[in-house]
Each structure stands twice: as structure tokens, then as C-alpha cells.
Amino acid sequence: MAKKFLPVRVHGFDVLIEKQGFRSGDNILVSGGTGTGKTTFCMNSLINSAKEGEKCLYLTFEESAEKIRENLEDNYEWGIPQLEKQKKLVIVERDAMRIARVVEVALKKNSNKKITDDKTFDFDFKPDRIVVDSLSALSIAFSNDEEGYRRYLKHLFDQMAGFNSVNLIITETTQNPEIYSREGIEEFLADGVIVLYNVKSKSGQRYNALEILKLRSSAHVKKLVPYKLMGKQGFVVMPKATLFADDE
Ligand SMILES: Nc1ncnc2c1ncn2[C@@H]1O[C@H](COP(=O)(O)OP(=O)(O)OP(=O)(O)O)[C@@H](O)[C@H]1O
Ligand SMILES: [Mg+2]
Image (cartoon, rainbow, N blue to C red; front, top):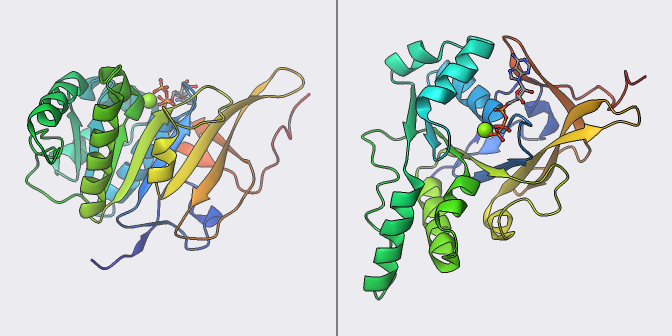
């Protein structure tokens, strides 16, 4: 399948990447601590892409579709309901516990251990963009079943790559992470890792900054870049700003 580079379309982000976006078919982890803006970053990318006519899919294993819609629309007024009506944006909940059970059964009875009936991507359209929110919720559902979680992860990543879409996969970390996912295997499977930080200055003020930790497809900026979550625009990256610049 022909690969192309698609802009991420989060304000100020694409200039951090030499090729000005992510490569289609690639799986990119968006990692960060709680409340750092993972959901906002990913939905912002989908909304701006849906407005350009792309088909965007948001898969949630965590918050309900209703809650995501409500929280983001109340804050940013992006026009989510209209985009959903036009079928450019589809927000769907998937039951992580059910998937974990299906995978467990599949691994018990299949000699080739192929997962076929998890129905994660049971859709009648081919998405240009996919967001998965989040691997952490999935991993909790698999609890002690390491083998099941790994198999499903590989299956999920392979399926997404097969759509030739740009795929953003959210993982929760501690606030100052050293590993960016449950066991670290996710970041090896991924073609890129974006990390969102919530850092404290000397005066105790908290700031947000992001880092492109890895990107197999392109050269990119390799430093912490400040960002803010702000009314209407949503996720705004500030490539020229200095971290802690306005700290007293
Ligand atoms: N209108 C707004 N303006 C500025 N910041 C906002 C606004 N609304 C929410 N926020 C910030 O966004 C954060 C939540 O963003 P988001 O839900 O994207 O984070 P997350 O990393 O996905 O969180 P979680 O770990 O709970 O899934 C809040 O903690 C708050 O600081
Ligand atoms: Mg979230």
C-alpha cells in the first residue's frame, strides 16, 4: 500500500517533524500522566482532519463516548455532534473485559492462536485516522493474563497498520515516566512515541511540555516543547516558547 505523510493537525505540532506529519499505516503512542491532555491531543487531531474530509474513528475502552463528547464539546465547542452526523467522526465504546474474555478463549482453543472474533474493528467503512483510548484500560482488563494482553496488542497494532490509517494509541504513565507503557513492549511495537509531561517549576507552578521520543519515519525536534490547553483552540503546541519562561 502506498504510504503518505499526513499532517497531525494539532496547532503548532507538525513543524516539529521534518516530514510535517505522521506516515500512514504507522502506530504512534501518545503517552503521559493523568490529565496531561492525551484525549484532547488525539481528538483535536481527529476533529481537524474530519473537517478536511477524512474518516476518523475514536475507539474508547475507558470513558463512555457520551462523556468524551460532553467534556470536549463543553470545553472547546469543536462541533463534534455535527461531524458525527456527517459520519466523518465516529466515536465508539468497546468493552475491554469482553475482549479480554474472547482472547482468553481464542488462545485456549486455537492451535495457531489467531484472534478472529474480537470485533474491535467491526465497521462498514475504512478509517483514515484511528485513536485508541487507552491501552492502559485494556491492560487492566487482561489483569494477570500477560500472554493474552501481548497477543491482543500485536493483533490490534497489525489490524490498524492494515488500514493504512494514521493511528494514535493512548497510554497512561506516571507523571515523570521512564517507561511509557505497561511493560515497555508497546513502545517497541510502535513506530513513534509522543510523551506529554506535566512539570513543576522551582516556584511550584506546573507547566505542560511534550517530547517526540521516537519517530521511525522522519527526523524531528528533540527537546521538550511547551504546550497549553486553551479555550476554543484546544491543544496548542508552542515550538518557539521556552519552558518556565514566565515563572516567578
Ligand atoms: N477549557 C479548558 N481550558 C484549558 N484547559 C482545560 C480545559 N478543559 C480541560 N482542561 C484541562 O485538560 C485536562 C484534561 O485533558 P484530557 O482529558 O485530554 O487529559 P487526559 O490526559 O486524557 O486525562 P486522563 O488521564 O484523565 O484520561 C484537565 O486536567 C484540564 O487541566
Ligand atoms: Mg483521557
